[in-house]
Length: 308
Ligand code: NAD
Image (cartoon, rainbow, N blue to C red; front, side, top):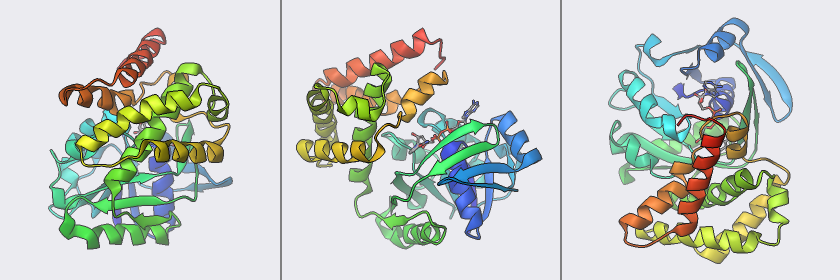
């Protein structure tokens, strides 16, 4: 498959590496000049599940290319999605499938401004990654990468992407309800990411506090109410139990939002708790916890001098 990775940070490099190793023709697209330069000069250095490797892989800014791709995987941060879609318009033809595995809510709507519904494939991933330096990343996981076609007539195309990922060791899985999976993942991020960032602790420490059950209940109840307005049934108790199983698995990990603040980078809060706060107002009810958490994270960004 001829694939472009639009946004080649931690996850983009990880997926790009696995897909190239699996026999696909992969190009990394990014805007970060030092990163592009480092990959061009020294190859992409990557550690996957503890195993180090280095590969030569095409990389550049979107405007350096003028061919079209069969499939584009988007791996920007949520706030970079629109800018990336603008930048890659010329790399898409009428059949290019665009796969989005970003955390956060509302992305299908943004993508639909640039890509016909028949070509949009949405999903979630539980693989994780990090950037150690320009051109040097790490990538970990084994869990499912779940995707589903946005247009009901395009299941075969989504299944082809699933098969390609499975062939590359990425554990591709066809989801029959990606909307639900996306909301449930948003609950993971809307609780653990936001709370660990505000409390400056890891997930294990957060789940050992006496307050965690009440905090999770407050946040998940608000997410569940907004999800319902989109036709997604998110049972509060079941979701809280799911959070506990995730927390047990990841233990002493600091979530990505905590790392973003540590590295003085803007967070994705507006696409998580921020969406819930905003959508609640639009639908005529309140989500005070989500609103407060969004404001607190923005206040933290301001204190750290992070530009949004
Ligand atoms: P990332 O921050 O590593 O990369 C995103 C973009 O930011 C890339 O284009 C990258 O080149 C650029 N970037 C990163 N550092 C930069 C710097 N110092 N200067 C200039 N540009 C820089 O993002 P990610 O962790 O790969 O996440 C992508 C999406 O996947 C997000 O929505 C995230 O929430 C989601 N996600 C991430 C993980 C994870 O473990 N990293 C897991 C699941 C989902």
